[in-house]
Length: 336
Ligand code: NAD
Image (cartoon, rainbow, N blue to C red; front, side):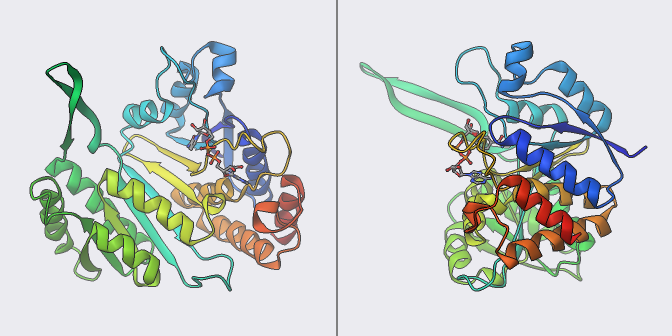
């Protein structure tokens, strides 16, 4: 019996890229036992609920999930799936590694990990309009909530991640020159915690400078930790530096669970055509394997994926080839 993992195939291209991932992980000998559950539109069709209790109960039991992209239904009465998952399991750390797989492009030596605080900041949803005269929306106000405890746990998570992944440096990204309290608290706490980890280097950079540095010299960075909004923006920028969303995995980690996923969406324009690139979910599967102590299997899957992409012959069309999802998957399995 393997380690129980909830598998959420998802919507659009989700079922095809998650089943490709399961095939590859099984071919690599992953010791996992899948519990397949519905969420998104597939769950609406069956239960009229995008996040049914059966799915939540499964994750409560396994505390681990591999998730395909989900379509959040538009309209009244449906809760946001990602927000509900984040809240239920207190998934406070969003981890997005990015490294150069295809060489010969603009950046050959990127290998960095962005760690974003997932629960605080401007995303707490404390906002409202203020009516002035006849205009009900004359002013909009939003409150960012940053707590010492929230800063401590995300910065500590980043340093612990650096230690366990043999990383050398953590960069704190902030805007404390302007947002003196909210971003200032994050920076203060970050600097304090950094002192406890004297063998890991630490620096800090203002977010706007960071956006520029990432484009000019991304190889300078190793682990980056930041608050929710800055992390949201920088993580997509970083995906763009290493070949786009088709190669970008992500993990949402908390004390009560960990959910691994592709960063991209359901790709409705290519759904059902059998041409989607499964790499993001495969890389998310590798993160899951590492998380459960099966790092050697993750390493094998990752190198088979990288070799297949670098060989450039049997790759999907977003990577410049003509292979279907299944042909690309077969090519990876042959290299395992
Ligand atoms: P998208 O990421 O689905 O697609 C953007 C573009 O990238 C499309 O042209 C698509 O074909 C391409 N693309 C994405 N993934 C690909 C892959 N694996 N292989 C090849 N090409 C790929 O973004 P969107 O169109 O803005 O969103 C579509 C739906 O996905 C929406 O309903 C949105 O809410 C949902 N979504 C879900 C998640 C999630 O569950 N984590 C994340 C983002 C968007």
